[in-house]
Amino acid sequence: MIKGLTITPPVLGRISIGRVIQKDGKRLPAKDDQFTITSQVQNKDGWINHPLDEKLRANNDGKLRQIPVRMLFNDPELNLRAEYTLFDRQTGRPLCVGDGEQCQRRTNNGVETLPCPSPDRCPLAQGGACKPYGRLYVNLSEDDELGTFIFRTTGFNSIRTLAARLSYFAAVSGNKLSCLPLQLTLRGKSTTQSYRTPIYFVDLTLRDGITLKDAVQHAKAIDAELCEHGFDQAALEEAAKGGYSNSCFEVDNDGLLDVAEEFYPVEIGDSSNQQSFNHGIATHNVTSIEQGLRQSVTAVS
Image (tube, rainbow, N blue to C red; front, side):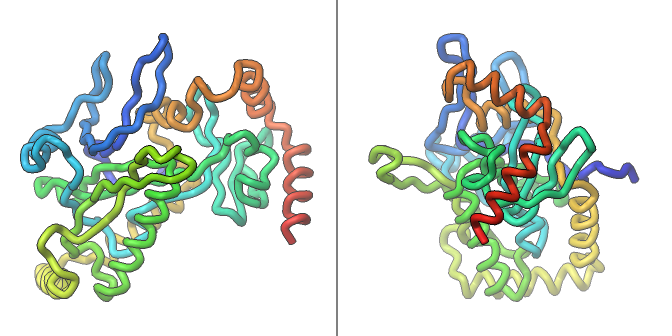
């Protein structure tokens, strides 16, 4: 197996609650009040909708705000990947990935392990350069039971909610998360930071009309049936862990620029700040970064 290549679940398409629009000759991220399911194919106008999008939309009166899903793994952290990530604005490639304690950073000396004091205290992350980056893998198609659709998000609301739901459902089902009948649900809320306008985030719930008691009983029955047929869920989980641990940098070449556009909209900051930031990243001034990190860690401790 190629070393340094992260092996993630096979992706058949994408789930999003936003899109990139053209405004004054610039490509800018725009939020939406519904889900969109796209394929792996794009044209001059963007990603082409997956046939499942039209099928599910017809069952939701045109607005797709609920998507029935199945988790591929019982371990919540295999379904949802989330870290603090700093991306190169030009290529969209991750330069630094951390969990709030340690980070892996690309430098002139290769990939180095450094302290990660979180974006608020990291000198390299000032100005919103580093943000949470979550990827949720879910199964939508019975035609490919090991294929997934990926939902990417940089929002704390979605990441925090999905992480909580996954861990709770895994706990109450006796670690049978992959057998539960679940759905992605789009929710809205208003905050002072949003100036009272609705912002949308993704939640994970039981499918409509199913109680928690029924869902757990259903999951146990499905798990027992799979075991009788020789399905090895534990081996699947170990294979997934091995693929993830092969590298700390998960790179999807097809979606690099989409991620960069969402992380760093053109309208944020003036051109001089953008150029200064890009130059600092490109030169990888490791010495000053490490000094700043040590000062930050010392201040925290």
